[in-house]
Image (cartoon, rainbow, N blue to C red; front, side):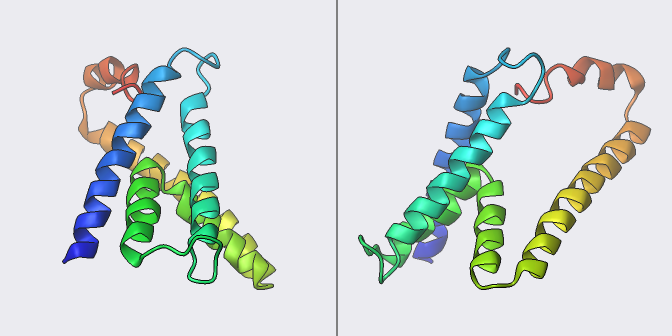
Length: 141
């Protein structure tokens, strides 16, 4: 039961950090999602750095609960891109370049397609006026 609690606590912290950083970067980049890109980069760095340093054979071995709190919880709540990045790197490091490329291409193409499909479905069941009113608030909360 404790691992679930650690992941839950970390996810809450990660989500709060994501929201705060998103709010801080509103208006920067002329409509480009600077906050999201920054979040994905920071989260990817943290999961790679912390995950490597805290392995049982790493420089600073950490408990499973601490690793769950930071990697699954904080990084997962902050960004799922960090997990994707770590998995892709692990595939490359183990020599599975084809699988790594497939992971990158499939994840990006299929996730963008899924976002487009979800948007299209929501657009069909949502009155046009409601879509126009919420478009400005979509990424700002």
